[in-house]
Amino acid sequence: MTWDEWEQSKTEAAEKRSTQMQLNQLPADGGAMVGHGNKQGDLTVDQKDLATVGNSAFKLFEDLGRYGRDAWSSSQTAAKDLTTQKFKLGGALDHVQSRWEKQLQSLLDACAHISNHMDFSKKAHQGDEYYIASTFSSIAQLDKGFDERTQR
View 1 (cartoon, rainbow, N blue to C red):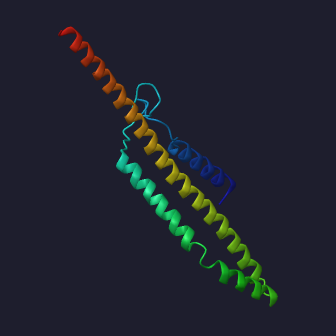
View 2 (spheres, one colour):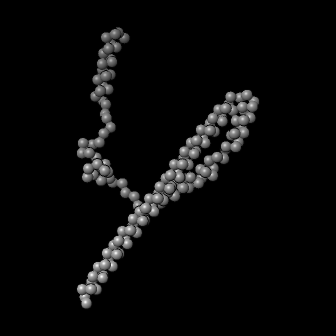
């Protein structure tokens, strides 16, 4: 390939690349982003959904806590034995075990956070529903009192 052919190939490749580039962006109408203008999202959730997510996160948390460290003791013993016998694999196994423990703890924390957040959301919304219901029932009680006074 000559220098001119090389330059021509580079130019053609650059032209193709520039015409094929696409940026990730919202559609021209602005999309359906919640909190942007008057647009509303289409995501809905109810108490059953929150409970299902929270229960799944809690079950995963319990199972990971129960079974996630089953190999810890045997892995540590193997790492120590291999290191004692001058195998570099011992240090590597210890490193893998340490990384596993950190990742497991991160996952346990995430599951606990999700479960707790779903419980909090459920209780917060139940509190809101109680407040709204009691407010409306007290208004109904007031209306009833006014009706009794006007009918005498």
